[in-house]
Image 1 (tube, rainbow, N blue to C red):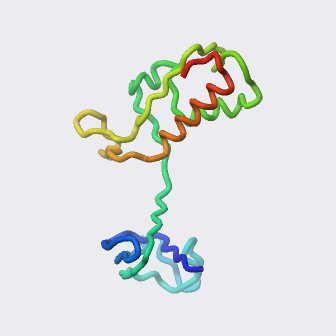
Image 2: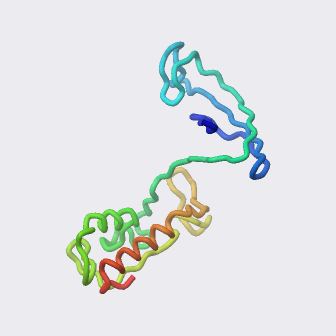
Image 3: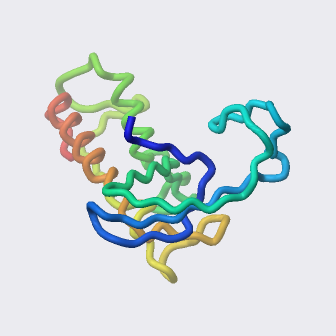
Length: 168
């Protein structure tokens, strides 16, 4: 009841500290999204024409829910797309989920026995300008996603527990 969701809003400015944030949001309606009076617009409800507005808020806490997109390495990055043995963590997790009832011995992936497996951390995160290739929009992911490490460790633990003869 004390949470307000602002869909389609952009953060204009922010400042402050935990317990006392000052936030400014701006909203605009894209030309193709501007509703007619009484028309339902997803996440906005029913209303009149959307007018751009600036919203000033004060809050003790801010939750920024941006969503995410899984990173797909460029062909050749760590051998991805060139060697069938190189896969993304989501692909590995999917294969492990499909094998959840198999236990003991060595891990088998795509009909191949896996004696040892390496998990490379921070692929697609902490990219360095001039070292890593930018995406099609010219962006690098210079930040830590704070998800990959725990997911990688969980996958490694799952493999070690389920397939003790496979080294990770």
